[in-house]
Image (cartoon, rainbow, N blue to C red; front, side):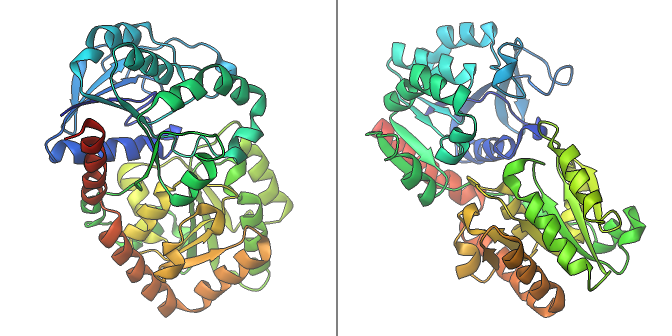
Length: 394
């Protein structure tokens, strides 16, 4: 099987969200399973850091970072990612591949790939990664609905299959948009080897000495309105009125200037000594905060599939998430606590884990067990390869 993956951005452009490491993680695992895989992407977020318009090897994956042109910047932080070089390569080379996988929707690389796939009668599969959720579309309907009607609807309907990360995402999106093609559900995964040699818990306290003797609560993700930082800070406030041994680490990149508002909330709530912003962390530094924290929390009002939840569980952290994260296994496997996205329930869950360290330990072990059982990249890649084979009739 010769598989082409076309992604608007790629590893290691981490600041553009969870799909970046997820797509690369899947690609690496597919290569290990013998799939002849090539990735086309742009150099967005990596200008001057990667060679452009030529194939390079990234962890065993053949990747070409095409130079892109800033165009239609109003569509988002990265614009439309127009790339004439990518368009030309798709026109020349797409006929050489058996199947195409597109892990995105609202951008030029997707539009160009779907156009050429139809032109050369190549089957393709699209992974929206939560981008079709009605909640997020309605928040930016002025630009997404016209684009959907003009381009994306046709691209989605012509796909052989739409790949969703959760059953909820599939039910919420596929029927609502009236799509008649094949819906498939395969989650993201993690490479457990990355979490087997973690930094010692004390390393985080050495980096941030004020965390000594503190219970560290970790938020890891984009600093964005959808992540529920408003209710998280209010929950921390209710706890901080009765104890001073808790501290919240907010780890992630600012999106659209939202961090200014979050910092203002911290000031208004009088939490300056209880909250620390670290910015975006990757590699060993991210592992330090994961291994050194005591509780992971993600109070999102809407979530497709959070890689941060998987990474936290792989590090044996008990997790507190909202039901809107659509990760029911967290509760059913006793790996953490799922709550409604409101301050009261979130504060109650935090107090429960803060007050009972043995409960934190047991939930952390259950969390690791859950990842090992269901969410390794090897198992996920096996599921995806089976879907590819079915599409190709192998």
